[in-house]
Image 1: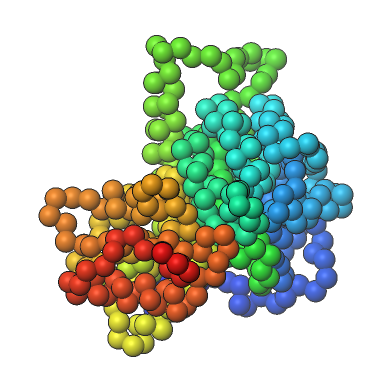
Image 2: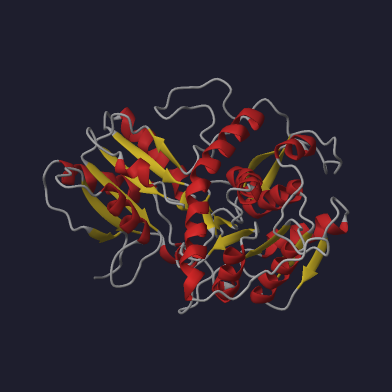
Length: 427
């Protein structure tokens, strides 16, 4: 969820998310340029579809896969209702979906597609084609466990496996954040200093099929925030150019260096985009990562995705018991908020990382990133990695409270195994 109404220390803020003062919209909103902001009770997939609609993509390519299906179904309804002018392509595979939107992006169109799990893995080849060619495509991935054994429920192994594909990666906490992040994603992707595709990750079923009250911005406000795509990276008879060309050893390093520079530029663009979004729409997500009640925290838990909402409630409850705990919500895995983790210092004594993935033979991927960013000679902060929620297993408030208990023991000097599996049925 956006951190509406509270600042990072948990103190009430003025001008937080402006949703509470808005009434629930009765019936279907008129899809016009003068459409006003309104609230609707939506699933995460429906909220994402509303975000896409507001961005006015000109081409959508769709191939259904659980739990993404209702997102592209809703978009097909929007197109059928002529909610916005768009070419909707129902293709034969996820690979074809990405190939189709890449072709449209080559012509300078704003495009969208979505997938999940095995579908994202099937897209893998095309992901690097898109990122290497620097097309600002936005993709929603409904996070789901990968096969085998087959499992249609949520964890983050699919997108984490693609973290080096050259795509910016966002992870969202709520349906509201999914809608808002899609709007921000297009602005970041299309920024001339970035020109890089963006993957917005929404936890399967936990968010995709869970309903909540979501504020839908007015179309005119979104149009002002996100103007039509203008890019020189397109096919043109007036200005012929080569695209997706072959590069030998002499210049391949330089092309990858340009991609790296784009990700470095994206760090500032993501922060600025979020600031601009907050001023216009009243909701703020703190750029690449949010520190929640961390100022005086001795024990901090870092997380990605929907579990952040549950961790907030546990942090607030433990605070009422006098325990100095906090949360880092990682919103961007790529680019990674390295500076935030590198700045961790006293009073923090123990930092835990909750991973809904595992890199077999090592540890959770987020833990690896966080620990590397925090490393410096003589560092006193001790760390633990918690693996939980794989294959859609619930991560309960009692599970999170247990993680904080383990961090407190570690902070107090007790021994704890560095890698721990929460809720494991056998060892």
